[in-house]
Length: 202
Ligand SMILES: Nc1nc2c(ncn2[C@@H]2O[C@H](COP(=O)(O)OP(=O)(O)OP(=O)(O)O)[C@@H](O)[C@H]2O)c(=O)[nH]1
Ligand SMILES: [Mg+2]
Image 1 (cartoon, protein in one colour):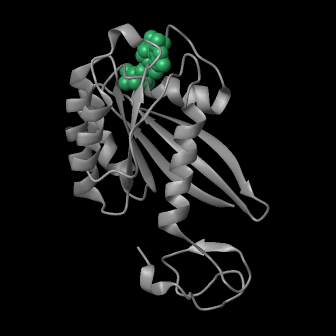
Image 2: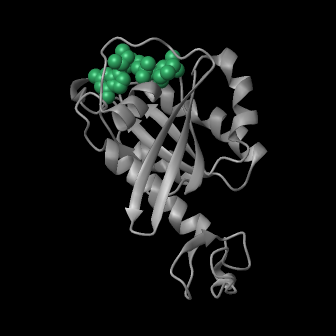
């Protein structure tokens, strides 16, 4: 089983813990406890017969005082989810601080922007165009996706996008045996065949 570390970042109250809880446990609470420090959940995803991935999802408390924990955890992460609350303009501006920490620590982390609370349509403060602009500026993977942990809208799609990005950027499909192996390896660790697509290695 291939295991990947995912870090979930964003300002306090944007809905980081709610998104993870909806995805992993399919539950939602109107009242949540703020995350103290760092929390952790695990999710296994079967992609196809010979490919399963385990996501180890690290959930950070959004309060300023916990940010000093982030650099240590983001090291070695496959992806960082950058969450903004679609009803709070300042949460999109705050992503810059998280991105700086990520980029200062690792060039290999795939960054993905995710909007939250799309069910609160009347309170919306961030347009799709605003989010796309930020996403492009920070060199994020794909287009930002709007989600609602309350209704469940797009939550699975958002994580499918994460898995797709990981497969595309981190893995090779061996032309000899069909297994997936890390792009960092020169040879398939299942059959030993030399990586044929090494010229496109990320
Ligand atoms: N209407 C609505 N409310 C949401 C949604 N997601 C989260 N919330 C609410 O927003 C509040 C904060 O959610 P959390 O998931 O605790 O936010 P967080 O980003 O983990 O917060 P910290 O741990 O303090 O950084 C809670 O009252 C949630 O019920 C959503 O999709 N829709
Ligand atoms: Mg939280």
